[in-house]
Each structure stands twice: as C-alpha cells, then as structure tokens.
Image (cartoon, rainbow, N blue to C red; front, top):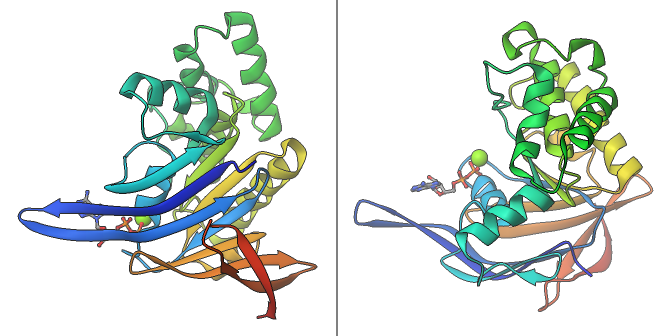
Length: 251
Ligand code: ADP
Ligand code: MG
C-alpha cells in the first residue's frame, strides 16, 4: 500500500494567455510513515505539488491516489470529506484564526466532523495541545503566542483529525533557526510515535537533513530522489511505476 501515489502528473497555470508549466510528468509513490522533504528553489513547484497531494487543487493531467484511492473522479464534497478525514495542513504563516484561542483553533477542523461528538472533540483538543507542549496556553489567542508556539498550535490542529498524512508547506520558513529545529524535532517525534506520514517542503538544507526521504524538484520536474538510512543519504532512481529503487549510490 502507498499513502500517496502520483502518476504522470502535469500542472499548468494560465497567467493571462501565458501557460506556466508548474509540474511536468511527476511520478512518485510513498509508503505510510515516511518523513519526506520536498526540496527545491523558489518557483520550482513545491507548493503546487503539495496542493495537488492535499486535494486543494487538481492536476491538468495524470492521476493521484491517496491511500490507494484515485482522487480524480471525486466530487468537490467527496474531496472536502477526504481532506477533513485524512489530511492535516501546516502552513508557513501558521494560518491560525486570530479571534479564536489556541484550543478553539485546534478544535476548528473537528467542527466539520459530525462523526466526532463534542466530548471526543474536547478530549482530542486537550490531548494534542499536550502533545505539542501547549496545555498551559489553551486559552491564549495567536497574538499572545510566539511564532514557534503558533506553529505548535497549527501542528495540534493538523493532528486533531487523526490524519494519515500531514502536509507542511515550508513550516519553518518564518521561524528563527533554533525554533525551526524544535518544530522539526516535534514533527519527527509525532511521525515516530503515531506513524503519521509527513510531507514538508523546504529550501533549507538543515531541514532536509532531518528527513528520511527526499524529493528534489527543479523547474517542475523531479531531479533527485533520496533515501536516508544510518545517517547517510542514498540516491535512488525511479522505476516506471514510481517506486524508488535504490542504486546504492552514496551521496
Ligand atoms: P514553489 O512553492 O517551489 O516556490 P510554486 O509551486 O509556488 O513553487 O510555483 C511553481 C510555478 O508555478 C512558478 O513558476 C509559479 O510562478 C507558478 N505558479 C504557482 N501558482 C500559480 C498560479 N496560481 N497562477 C499562475 N502561476 C502560478
Ligand atoms: Mg511555495
């Protein structure tokens, strides 16, 4: 089983009458539980790729499978339901609702879930605020929290739906170096503890160094696939079905 499978995906944007090819023939497949960095310079297609995996946007052509289900044929309502159940989002600018407390921000995505009753909602809010070390700040509004604390709230919010995948678009880009390291370490702890798949974009080599899988994109194409084992990176090549086959090449 793969948690995410992408087959020959292209994404074009229209800018006036100009076509921008943001992604060109991307084929990838990831096992559940990976801690994956999507790396590449600004404009290389990282956000576009995350938005497609997160079913926020649809490819121009090609197929995307989440937990082995093809998302191509789904209606807007079905996609919203998939996002609400399976995919947690973390953003560079935290995207917390400023008028809500930390606890209310964590609770927010659960309000769309009729299958999660109020008692269970409160339990999850308490639990995940505790997981990110913010129980004492439950009543604080975002503007009463530091950047690192805000990102912790965003992580708790992403986890509250018990997602199979957490997508994070440059989650440390607005944080100082030490705080960024703490946030990454927290994500890694959660990845290990719950086997939650994390897919995060970055252009920071120190962030890449924390990943166990690497996809480097350049100009909308995959330029490098890497697997880290025993603290060493191994380059891998892609086979036609998107599975990574190790070449045993050390970087
Ligand atoms: P990254 O996240 O790596 O900086 P993006 O995925 O945001 O890259 O962008 C990839 C390419 O697609 C860039 O050339 C960018 O200008 C273009 N692009 C992204 N979003 C849009 C959009 N909504 N409309 C037009 N072009 C876009
Ligand atoms: Mg981006």
